[in-house]
Image (cartoon, rainbow, N blue to C red):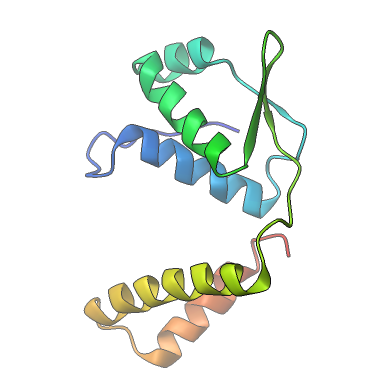
Length: 126
């Protein structure tokens, strides 16, 4: 996977990296157990401060998406089912509400949103 940095974005670089990684996992582009580039290597490739990469990795590790093995490297974690159904639904509802709020402000109709979501869902691993 190749990470892309948008220097014109208002989103911080570590957040851009985190979201790109999360999407790649959701799409099946990165498999559990895959080794991630080292902080130093990725910072060189992207020409960003190593602390920025470390922060993105640290946040992904806190989310349970990455696993650091001292002296070995950083790996994509195996999915865990530790969240209850109720907690998972609450997080999903919050994300959907945020998404719908943005879509409404962009003046999309309910039909437009449903069509776009259906099209985009095709590219993800269920």
